[in-house]
Length: 540
Image 1 (cartoon, rainbow, N blue to C red):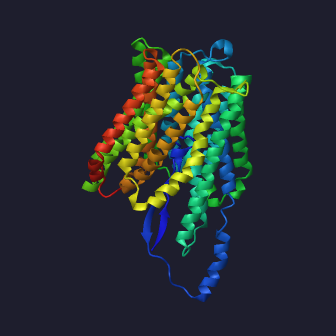
Image 2: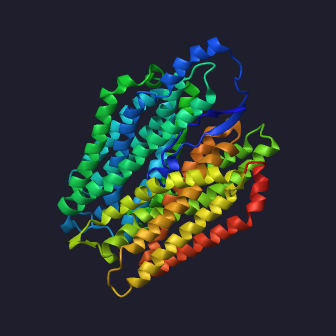
Image 3: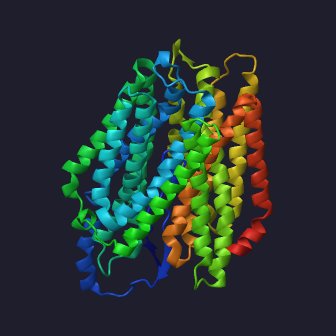
């Protein structure tokens, strides 16, 4: 028997240290091997195999586009919370630290929320190639707005543009990579070889993600903190512009099947999507209005509205799926299991999102950043996640392969991920305690915390993507994948709520409470792993 791989559409990367959680984890299915053939047939296929040993010529194009897009995304993200919290005299917006961290959280939530309509546009209206072009143009426009001294309103507009563009571009690039290999697939070809080439191609592709995410904070962070915040945002705009130009100039390397526009949206489907988007906007508007009537500021109202949206949308998704006719008992049981997986993932991302916001502010104020007599930028710590991801991803892949059937179950991996996250957060609690006297602590605290956190993410994030494809009923495959990324959105939005506790708790107490909560959640998942496995009905 040989394995053939059925491709699932990738979505934007949640909690990406280097887009870790956006990796494609195909689902294998058994097909009979083609073991027959004679000498003449072998001679006919030998040249084909030599040609197919090389990757499609469009892979380098997509690698470059994704690398520069991630450069722009993570470059802006690395300095965003620092810019929001910097005083107006230093060129920032002067927001309180907890408000700056809250804005950072809801921005991450918005990126994942807008991937839902963005993915629909790419699938049903624009096609992947045009979605990448339009998405890249919108992202570039957003970064250009941020590169100008346009104040709070302009910053909000720029962030919305970047989030909307990312929602169109990010799912489409990953889909196009799979399309390169689909376009070369021929009847009777060696499926095992094709699967291996596809996996190797995605490994190369996601290396570009990690490279861009690693390099971005080093460049935009230096420009933003040492020259001007808007110079850092301008570097992010330049990165996306380079990626957009590569897409325009090298698009001829892509096969026609990948570049072809689509027009599969039916009038009823279009009305349904417009109705869903209109309903979400109306709900957010009502929530914003009520919040402001209760005396909250506009910024607080937006944060509350987006947070409620990230809670209501998954509830609607799950309710619609459970009420759908025709689901057999196995599918319903697996959906119930996925509810618990969703909640555990949201808990994970709620705490993990602190790495780009509160931990960055902690590093600015309480970490000794001297290096040979020179103080390096705070945002450089944001390169640790992608660096660790590059170093650890291969090791974890080899570990799971070698363990085979002896590797931990899905519930056990989730428990390990939450436990690791709790330990990493407790490391930060120790750093907060060491800095309680007003001094600066060693950067080793952050190096250790990020290392443990990325190890935890390696346990939970790829597992969550994989189990999402395996638990999903056939008719709800895309909805379940959307729910996985909605868990990232919910986590980011909830993080914008809990950061308010920093106004009443010290750093040490805040991180200690979060770390303890993660450990308790890990214990609950571990204790319930037998029941969860029973609900999953044969999915390990």
